[in-house]
Image 1: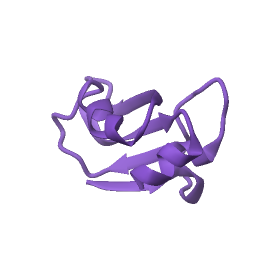
Image 2: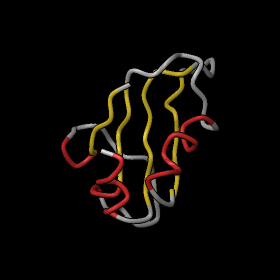
Image 3: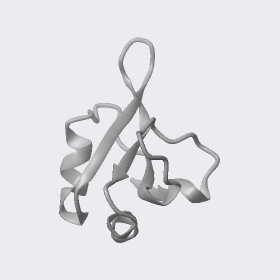
Image 4: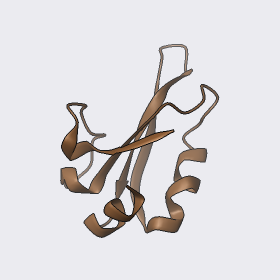
Length: 80
């Protein structure tokens, strides 16, 4: 699995109330069976999470990438 700051990519961030690209983390290359429930479990230890999402195909299969929005910039930096 690879983890990137959204601020350094051209991918759109998941919709959030307060858009701060330095709080958003882009994750790619995880398994096709990965779910929205598994993603926050990987990032809980880095700090509080505002939202997360696994991108899905129309038939609800994982596209093997997703986004995590942290409550603070510091949490996002630690996750990277």
